[in-house]
Image (cartoon, rainbow over the protein chains, first blue to last red):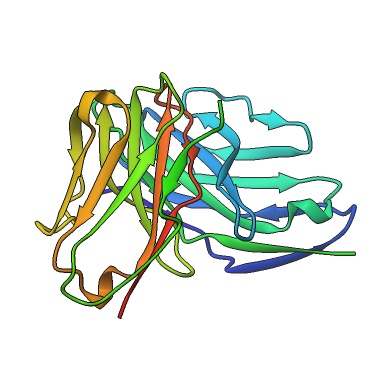
Length: 116
Length: 112
C-alpha cells in the first residue's frame, strides 16, 4: 500500500519570505499523481498544485512550486513571497495512475504559520 | 455553482445511535468521494462513487458504515450504532476528472 509522510508537523515563515514543506511517499508504481492541498482554519480544503509522475518538469502555480524527485520519492512544496493568507494546514497526497485506483492517500499534514 | 455542500455541519449524538450525513456535489461532477479526518491527521479515504456506482470502499470501513448515491447526484453516508471512535470530521469531495477534487466544508460528528 502507498504511504505519504510529512516529517514537519509545524513550520513558520516570515511574511514575504520563502518556505519549503517536505513530503516523501512510498510506492511501487511508476504511474501516479501527487498533489498539495491547503486547508485554512475552519475552511474547505483546496488544491494548490498537482504533479504527474511522468512529467520531468516541476509544476508551478504562481508563488507555489514543487521539487519532484521521482527516484528519491520526494515531493516538496515551495511557497515564495509568503502571505498571511498562506497560513493553513498543508497536505501532500498521492493517487495511483491506474484508472481503477481512485483512492487518494493523504499525509498527516504540516501546519504553516506566517509571521507578520 | 455554489460548490460542494454538506449537511449537517455539526452532529452530536449518543453512542449507539444511527446518523446520516448528506453531500451535494458540484453539478455534473460524476465522481464523489467520502473521507474521514481526525484531529491533526490528513483525510482518510472511505469510499468512492462514479455516478451511482460505488466503485471503491476502504477496508477500514466497518459494516456499520454505508454510503449511497442514488441517481448519481447527492450522496448519503450512514453510520449505524455509533461509537466514540467514530467522532471525526467527515469530508465529501466531488470531481469532474480523476485529478482534482473539490471538497465540501465537512460534517463534524461528536459521539458522546
